[in-house]
Length: 603
Image (cartoon, rainbow, N blue to C red; front, top):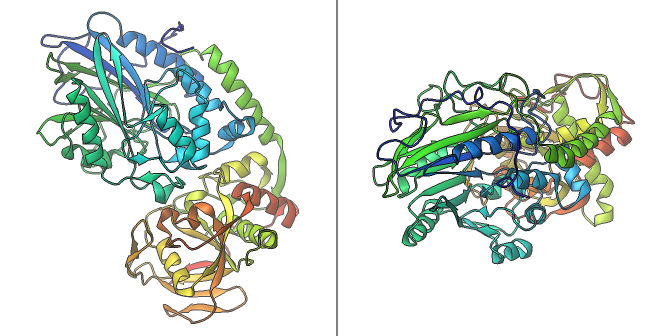
């Protein structure tokens, strides 16, 4: 059943649709197509839903995929009402994300709850983001196959899936495509997709080739659509943020609208109702609030509207575009802007009953079960905050995570025929709870919030000392920026000088600029690995980490060194460590709130 043929009662939309004033192309009227307008297209959009099916984080009265589905239906009906008008619904990627809610899908199996909900929303096309690959290509294939017949096309012009059997089969069936075409009121609308070229360094695409000529590949698809007479083209891209899309537009022609994803920016006017706690994102170029839409000038000198919205199913983006008879954009209607997904007056919408019954209720029951399962007691608050926190400095939760990798690597090494690890590295970006967990009960749900990804504990058995220093140089190369590559460590201590030269590497792990920040590295048994910035000759090290990092994620320069996964995810390693090795007791002595001096900086 698709949302195009369902009838839902939209409780109150008007109050939510307080309108953002558009840019310089905006016409004076907003009730419908005006003079010189041949066709009005409403592009409904979202991005970065990331499996927040139950509600907006910290705001249960807002968001939630069941309310989101109802709101989309009402806005779609409004956009298709009367005259030469039509509406489409698209996603700009990150359509699921590892965590407690998605774990309900993994335990259940195909069809995934996320796919059931998104099929009910009735998308016309979905871009493929980086998080779609966090569990590897097979889980992405499971997700796409969960839609069954009548699902949307998944669109990306710069991914070559020919070496991944299951995804290649979906390409052959026309489910995964470079571009798609939909018809509305006699008009054909072309939709082209793109995925971040940094995919290999921030997710786990395995044998999927990530083609780097993004602009050229998009333009090839646009030209092919134009050759078939399609004169209205929408780009749905997951390039990691508006900055990347604004840089892309000048390299393109004949793209009429860009819907960006990956940056989670919130664009709005000062009068737009927002989810409590949300603020309009500041434009990094000007420092001013980002208005909806912004414009970027393409290669032909045409101003192209570029939009995005905050994720987590908190908003439905609505871009209302007026076209003339030649298919040229002549204005963006003042009714354009983000519409919040609210469950409270004055703009409340009722949850879609089908989505509520088949998705929200079983997922909530699953998550509640994890929340009730107490697995440990902590005598100390555990710091998983990002900045300042696990992405900028040593924290006690970072130490706990690294210790769990080291313990699991050593415990399972013999069974997998690999050298027991000497040390462990946990990328700060893999610690996801982003809060200070208070002292007291630790539940199974907490462990998933901390370590949600499907990353497996892995051992890299022969890392030369010089290369180990390079990996640490990379880990501290972005400080003081809160970057996911910052490492939490176990089995050793190190000191670095943040004023030293920052390492620069490419996605292959080739060091382009050697770093000089790492000054000393000392194993827990006193063995010196680095002294005064120089590598001390000696045997290679065996390193425990996660498979994402071992493959060069976050540009860690492992450079293809062989590694072995040892049968447990990093969440399972954390759970086993605190329940087994620590006997369910996290003490202030072992994990003091200020850290234990594993990572220090020079004065």
